Image (cartoon, rainbow, N blue to C red):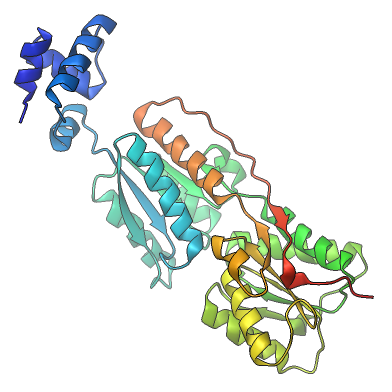
Length: 335
């Protein structure tokens, strides 16, 4: 196996020059860089990652904090970020707050990543307050937030316009002729859930439709919670012809629950999901959903952190608009 000394000898330079080339932090002429790169290629030399970290004083590790590893939403986020990091020979450490019930427990997950010498941290943190996030940023500046929109931290926050997403769902149901509409919401303690719900309600009001409070149930984001919320709606003496769900897991659970109760999704009751995860087009019937450009959001957040941590100059976008993907779960126009 080739060593750094072998590379230096073949390139005709000192070992220190090769070390500086690997660290990327020293001024070396382009001619010398080409000689070292050629020697490395000829010898099939792969630098030891630990040695490179010691040389550059970087761990080349990025931390990712998410509220849960379950579900397609965070899996897609993880896949996108891991792919972007791997392109640049960076690694990832994961932490999740699935069992956390307090801010202290959630922040303990962040401490777990900090203690492992991550060069920077990406956080998807819907339930932490703006004040808590500002405290985190002040304490640990090399952090970027995913699925949050904070004006004071605008360069470090990446999110879709969830208010607009809620409006799109309302516009679609109104256009189909629905007026008695139920909601299976996400956790209203989360910023994105509140924004999409508010956009939905505000858009309905523009059409003269008021949501009955009895037809709003919290479904969290899991299949089980979505099914229970739908059952509660069905057991009330309040008819409805459509349900808007806070995410696609809840929407799939709602569709299954309606089917078990003998109702036809798309005819008796229309269902709109949110996120447009991959499986949405494979449900029966295929599910109408608000598409959130999660890959683009995650990629840009990752690029911003790479810029902060490693002085890269990757292009960044901050504007991400949701779109409506219409499928058969919203069925026909009602008279």
